[in-house]
Image (tube, rainbow, N blue to C red; front, side, top):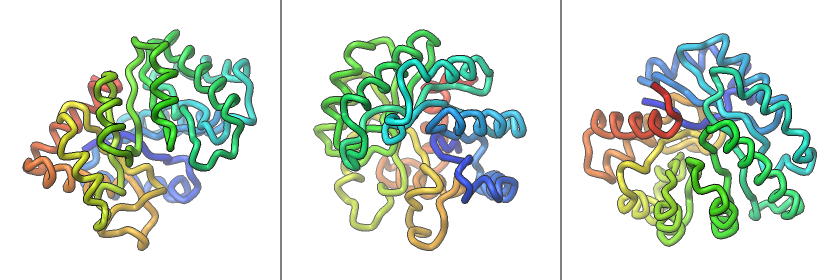
Length: 254
């Protein structure tokens, strides 16, 4: 298994990183992508990758809810850090209209600056889009060559169709396992198999059966995988091969 998106630099995971990685390995997780949300976080993510080169890769970017602290020019440090071999993507970046704590024009400026960076670096992009799918896709139309994954997808079938038709991937997290989330599982059922990634978004969104009981961590991606297997009528091994292949293809991991 591969956890395609989590936040190992969050203190809840970083302070017990060896134990977290041990539990992930015991669960069958062979690789983890840790996602940075600002330049300082990016440095920590790269340090983790250097410490555990066989276990962790990273994406570096500025989260839309952090974008009011930066200017397009201030992403230059990301450009320098992105030359590190452990950095496999830009992000997470995008638009967040749910919290709406950052001026939308500023979110757009920082989003486009990071898309330009990804285009220059020839790297895929991890998208955060919350209640902003239409605007996010409108921006991405100006960058048609960039490979994107809409992480932690919890939207409608109509939104999923728009993303798929644009050539992008969908990342499914803990919410797809929630007992009352049949609507999202129906979306998963209809999504083409070659567009599905699995993730935890740890330390957030713990899946069933540990929801509300434990801080989310990469080992719990097994529960997301189990849901994918059940919904897609696959064995666990088949679902594992499918999602791992998709993740390696998306991130260009050999």
